Length: 481
Image (tube, rainbow, N blue to C red):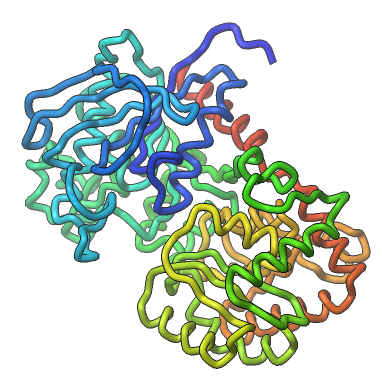
């Protein structure tokens, strides 16, 4: 396409690959700038300069304040990892032990409301006055509750710059006590009129949903699910009130990073050389100390939580192992789930193995070597794991929710006959539903020709950002006229 002039958008996120990642939000924040560039949008990403972030490049100060929520701060611009980054340096807010959200004790930083309100405040200041290098956005794109006060500060500051808010996971809403309203630099009237008020407290996410010019979620199915009480987490009425201002745009993956033909961490293979995947399977077994796995080798790369449905696995793995299946799991989170899964691994040495923590390189080897990837989530706004599985020929076994339902074609008879089946989708997210899905996986694996056809169909799917970036560009152009 021909671009007549470059347009400018500020992305506001609490994390961004390659600097820091705790979930899929970081992948999206890191992938969008390059995806939008062909559509004429220059995106700069504003995020906190957390302690320990290693960002190489010349840091150019472009904004400063003597008192940003209790201390001095500045924004520095740099080019890192192919991204135009704006790092908010505020030592009193971000220079501390622990992660972006949790302290070393595993609990939230007590001033998280102020820490991320400050990020949003700076974004609004940049939208109003621009940066000292002359850059000023035409639009601000904020992410999740950590960025959700951007529309509020734009609105209450009479700053005529439109905003988009993307909900990555509505379960996290930025709720805090009402008496913090002054500390957050928000007007009392915004609480009294219901914009900020959420059951007697303040909800940053509610404010963002109501005040942003447009609201997006990370898959079309999740956008529909949020209208229902079981998914909307108390905000379904607020979502419904936005009507046509709400839409779902499916996430994508970086197909240069996640490419089995060029991935430096695996033995390369392609849809044409799928037999070479077997060598990666043997390597994966070695990584996890697995020995004899005559049936499908499934992988799980996930946070251990009730949301992700991993509490169901201990109930179904006996039957899966009895049918020849094996499991390699990488994750961290809920201690009870981890203990239960460790117990299963102890019962089945060589067939089930568990690693806790996070390893950036190991998931590539897991998707390359796994025959299937399990994603039994109770709710999943988009999910990237199943997309990585499709890309690497690991057949997804997923619950029929959110982006999982949008990206995996269930292996029913019609889809198998048509050659378009890419995975197994189960609707009852309980132990019986997952057990039946694993039985179907074993049955399909026992028919090598059918199973390879499913793997190839999945590998041929377009999982990149091309279509999604075009949708975001259309949305931007609609509101930033």
